[in-house]
Length: 203
Image (cartoon, rainbow, N blue to C red):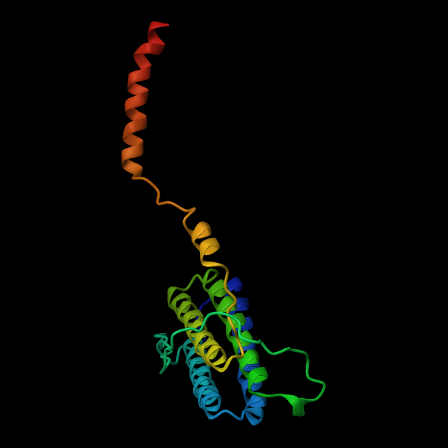
């Protein structure tokens, strides 16, 4: 017996589950090309998490489990490295035998980014609150996994972060100022209106 759902959220979940299956299959295709043990451990950890998350979603839809999505916990958090240091040239591989750790990591990163976007959009279309929370948590999980992959790429020099001059950065960011107190502004407007009313009546 499946859960009672609206047409729109049914199609959104259909797209999410199909994309998740594709991700699981893609991760397994990538695995034989991994040489770095850190990347291999990360891939295996994320693959197992994705499988568990997929199974839980299916069980909830079939009313066979609870819809408390488990958050993804990255074991390591490293400070990002900023700036460019002789970034390597990039081009498509002409053979699958040319695939290396950078290719695998970049593929994982793109997959997680896409999945995070899809799941957050799906959550906005969910009428069922339980399913909505699962989609929201799923989007956060993909975001966390994407950042874990990005950290590996950044530390390995695969994903370098270009920067602007500090003066330019500060100029852009300092151009924004905080908003004033809304209630104070409303009070000032009312005072002005009350002050202006007698003057208008005298004309």
